[in-house]
Image (cartoon, rainbow over all chains, first blue to last red; front, side):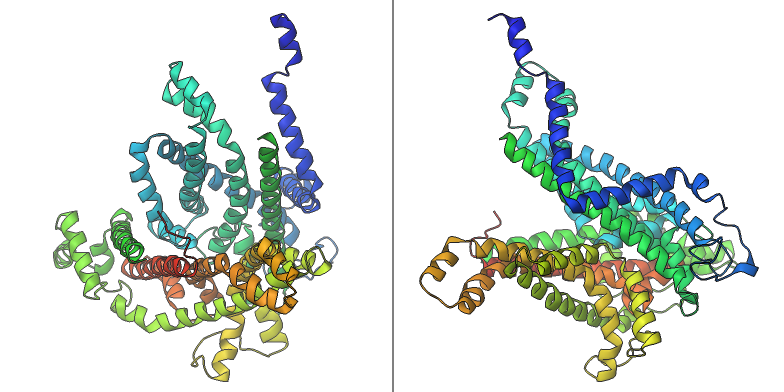
Length: 298
Length: 313
């Protein structure tokens, strides 16, 4: 059999990868909850990207004559707040903020966590010191670490992104380290090393792509945590400052008026819950889909 | 077992030193000179310099850190920039409220979580199981500050069953329990959801185990199989989740205390961050982080006692 024939019979590496992705996607959309989650995330993405087209009203435009209008009012179908600002437009622009903050915090956290996890898992000499540092960060219960960082940096949305990203680093580092420890024992890594490939090349080209499954699941679930924490910190006055249409800050502002205009807190709360729920269920479903894929591959 | 405890306590001491160092450094990284903040806008350069000298801020950093450590052991966490009150005194005043809230919340979480998880597993793939799975996911996703506000709106304002906020009465009185009820439900919901998910999966695993099938085959009553054989073993991983959640609840009290206007350590922390009152922030963070690692240590040891297979090598 000629080499050409063999090449034709074997699917290419790229095709194999595409096939695996397709199978994971198929497994994912078999899960009804995941579909609900994906639809909510798609809607949020659409709201975030097309906010000016969807609402056409400045979310910060005040009109005291129209203050505290109830849900269902013509022209303001989700009502208005105490300053007469349209709640629907603030929710739509809030979707943009929550998505941006979530993506920013998770991406930064991933960069830090992946680098530390790769180094820790790959180099035994660095493992002890990096993992002790990670243990130390784990000694602070979640939001407390974020608050300490905000106490140092000051209250703002950008600092919330930094705080949440730092808070995400230890978990991500542990997940990546765990994967690296098992991957680096694989034969193809030993083969790459004997072929003289540099450590950096092995880590970036061969180890990292194989750690992607747990990283993707972590990132999806972390989006939920990041969005929830941003809202919580803004609610406490440590994140977004008025008049930014951030969902947590909207609830904080509405608290004073909840006796007369409960919609001021109910609507942003539902928005936060739906988005966090969506990322949680998609993360859960992704983990199942990728787990199944990995067990089938074996 | 003794070896495990000694090893864990040694790790804890190292961790506490690390925590104290991070907390100490946070004040030095933060912008603004503590001496100028204490002196206020009217202080002269000489006044600021005298305060610096008095606080030992001219000493080398390491010497300052050792002074800080010595202070911690002596119960001296410094003085508030804002109220000039001793930090340890302010924390001791407010800590009982935080602890009461955390304990009440974990009770709510265990009762709801374990019950829902076990029933879900026993009624696997029924409408109850489906509903409780969705509610558990919702419980994890719900912002607890929002849930708190909604509970206040319904049960305190409209129905007037509970007070709107505050925690002034002792928890063993009816009034005290009423004051604790809404904050405890608010804080405990997320943990209840996590405990329910864990109890369900642990119970499902045990129900399908060979020894349970053998017990049933031997004719043991279903109630005895569930209570004696399944529950005992299913609860081992759940205890860990409960312990870890208690640690997180201590952190979670920060938000709940703000919603319900409870004078606890969490609210003190928020007020201090807003006022840039660093000694107060440091003291509160140090307390919560120390309690968190202590709870984790206890969970580890209890886990090893319950499950002798654990050796933590």
